[in-house]
Image 1 (tube, helix red, strand yellow):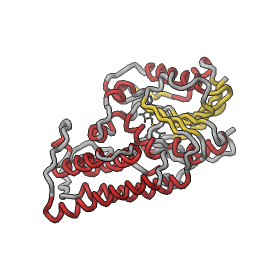
Image 2 (tube, protein in one colour):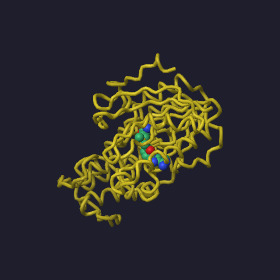
Image 3 (tube, rainbow, N blue to C red):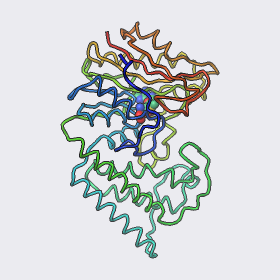
Image 4 (cartoon, helix red, strand yellow):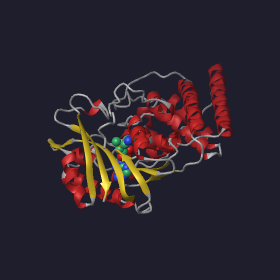
Length: 375
Ligand SMILES: C[S@@+](CC[C@H](N)C(=O)[O-])C[C@H]1O[C@@H](n2cnc3c(N)ncnc32)[C@H](O)[C@@H]1O
């Protein structure tokens, strides 16, 4: 089934259109859903990604005129997916241009000494992670966004702001949580926001020219262990990548972004499956990982049309110092829940990851593309 398909995307451009918008851990290369959709879906089908993350599958589906459904437990993920996969009208783009002009004018005036005093938004341990001038400028941008009425424009601007939060914070980098003094000058936050806005605007214009409104996009901030809100046997194809167990805490990764944007942190914290919190901090039994996956796979089975396919990218993990060979576990339970295992392609995470991200590299761990068919 997959023999003639080349899944080696090493060196491919993974940043085109809206794909490069906003950092998100462990995205898969857009070429993966693109290739699968080209081969296994047709216009008008419904594709589901129950762990949609940054929306990679959804963006590619819409580009191919395929209806997209995305689910993620993380509210920021849902907002990001929505923005990346939603085309904007010329009218909306002109509202974004007006917003850009007003931010640039504000920066210009503030640099001339007309800086306003801003009542900074209250956020836990703010002073440790953000300089006061930065907090003022972020609050100013948020206040300006709140004055707008078009939800799509507002969401787009929120994602632009969210994308620069770590850069303007005291946090060392997206992956290093230490605070350091970056000595950020006045108006740097406004100027960085304006620069990022220009870039993302061009990306969304390009995307919008390729995607018209003839397909649907539905995104749910929900826990994929229960898909009762999706009609049974309504989905033509699933392309997804569940978390790699004990590797990340997705809910923590965007903590400050979510606080600034008033997005819920607790729902993701308590319902994220496979998190480091569960398996490193709370030291849950590794069997819990299998149980959660079974719940999710049963739900995927329920919403798929008969004989339809699910493409799952997933990696082995280490829990309590033991390697969890996830392909074997999935093979074991798939038959019981009436999924036929059609094919498994595995690559060695220790050397070079073909499908996913070399950051997961560890001796003995593999990453798998597993194809299941509903029986
Ligand atoms: C590997 S990432 C997916 C990345 C995605 N393929 C992309 O390209 O951006 C796994 C995602 O699963 C989500 N997740 C974890 N537990 C979940 C649950 N119970 N229900 C739905 N989503 C969940 C995480 O928030 C994370 O966004």
